[in-house]
Image (tube, rainbow, N blue to C red):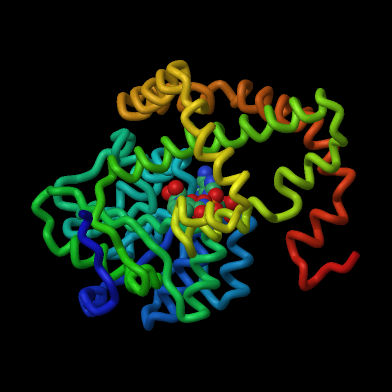
Length: 336
Ligand code: NDP
């Protein structure tokens, strides 16, 4: 079992006297910066002269150019999108790194795929929240935590282990638990969910919608049943409260029998082959190469796939139910 670090296992003093620099003030950047400040540190913020800069100024930070913070900071958190990190790192960060600096990633992507050349005398760590940025901040403000994965490169730069854990505590993650992991493991669990779990669920939802419409059901009734009622979310929450299968007891006996007796039919050999293929594409770097090329070409396939998605009749049905969607999304603010 992975080692799990909680608040009492971690000493944040290792961060005292080190300048913490944050590159990027977006989803994770803003949340982590505010949490680190509320944990008693004075992070320096770097952002381009662009949209997020103004938010950081509003929040009371002086905002510096990225190369300036790269030069000043001893511990640098890279909180910009994974796909822009290699260029920003190459142009604005790496020329300013000094021995014993620590570079902290919030995902394993660029370390696992080796897109960033790391000097031997710089510590490389990962503190990857398993939580969206907004919730990283909201949970912290409410005294609560969230899980995160921590890792460090085995390059003999030992203090970076302590720094990874101290940062995990400063952002509030060790209130729940920081799991000792690796850059590779983070990439596998993240990309495998993105390429198997979520598209599998999305595709099944579309097939469910299409078949019921063909069978004469009303699109808006089906859309409400599918996700707009909020039952989907309640089932997911019940999985946490009662257990993955334990939540089945909240359904009728007919439902329990239907689900358990038909579950194995959902994994024909073709699906199992696709699961193996996705894992191979992710772990070998084939997907990374494909995605890098797609970005270089100006994302033509991404645009086509988005268009295909939003042209689905489910989206038109959803639009007709806009009022219902707003009420379920925010029941306390909206009224019928
Ligand atoms: P965002 O998309 O929210 O990042 C936006 C930030 O990046 C802004 O500050 C933006 O500045 C800056 N930025 C964008 N492009 C550039 C560029 N070319 N040069 C300089 N700055 C740029 O990122 P996330 O917070 O989603 O992700 C940050 C890291 O956190 C990633 O490694 C991600 O994998 C990881 N992560 C994200 C999670 C999430 O919930 N989103 C969850 C866990 C980990 P500007 O004002 O210029 O636009």
